Length: 249
Ligand code: NI
Image 1 (cartoon, helix red, strand yellow):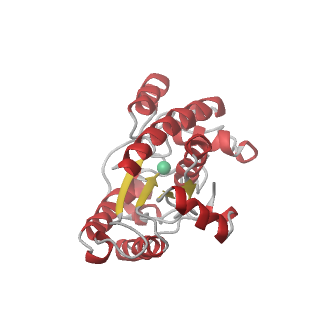
Image 2: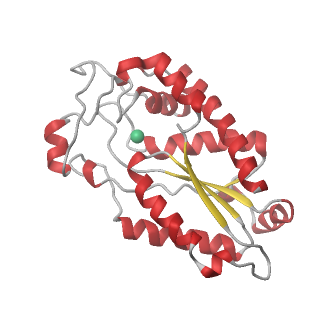
């Protein structure tokens, strides 16, 4: 069930049977020469929607711009400041809590968001309004997980991609987008070296100088849509189980 495709009476009815919601959260940033700019939000969104088919939970609109200042050397990237993201997440949580949601599960697709989301969650945990019951709900709990957190997902990545998985514009995330949007698959001819360099960087200019095509340690030519379908299934199964535990807590 998608919030965007529901009417308010449907949401009101949903709240009589469940107080939980999943919010996909990602980033709008370059993903190498062949990866989609929306990769980091497409992945958690399609996995959440797959999991919702089985678990029946409500999926919020995706929080689709995150912390990506290091990718600003590449056209198309949009980045929030951490304080902007924390404030916006707070407004989402307060709005949902007003309607009676008590378990808000952010499902993340971008490693660069993790520190900021943790800071936001620490703020929610210490918020006296969210922590107390109100007229239409009990205390609000908020959690976050990444789509690759579930052990079978990383096991699959290691077994399938080995040293070519890398850490940015990885074949696994690109495979998920290929399965979700086959019409948007890009040609990958001429990518060199086969496995990109990895390492540290400082700012956006330094990132572009060290990783000129945007990849970090990855070989995205290994991506295939059928692997994306498998990854969606593995991660969705993990989300169904983890969400179930969260809403029962
Ligand atoms: Ni990514």
